[in-house]
Image 1: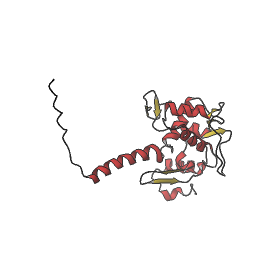
Image 2 (image 1 turned 45 degrees about the horizontal axis):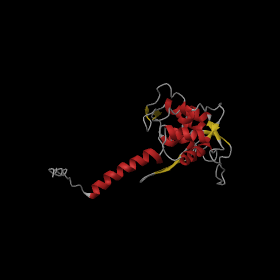
Image 3 (image 1 turned 90 degrees about the vertical axis):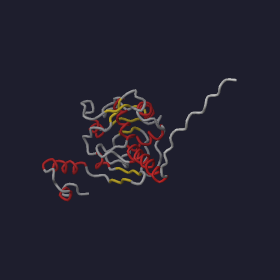
Image 4 (image 1 turned 135 degrees about the vertical axis):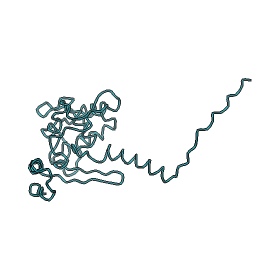
Length: 219
């Protein structure tokens, strides 16, 4: 019989307190959930799925004046190139961007049945069509001018923006709802004209106090 190979030496074992291990791992999970799904980025007011939808629609040349394309085609482009998650979740996120009762300034111009305020569901993605709105165009404006950092997509087949240039105060204008691990966000929508007046005041007086901005932002 051949000589038996001795078993490998066991790796060095480090004792870690269960509490410390749970805190470390739970924090890593929480940060991933917070930044990846639940809370919007303060710079463009978008969650990753919304940012990828707008960027994917731009890659399909669905500008405000273009002929809208089937929502199924948009969802397929976003899922295949940027957001490897469920197609229905992507479509639901796009539908919300198109509903004028869900967004004060819709980022998607939807054609067809996109649901209503009474709670009726939108039509299936094979029936509806969509394109970008002028507000979405403002968020994307300048993306070809090295205005923002690009990162590799999930499969390293292309690039996607870390954040959109954001030529529109989307976070405050449209507000946002989100829940994460140990925290949540609930930002109401505001009037865009008032926000622009407040921004001009901040440009002139960068040290202006929040209380003084209430002169322009009434809500």
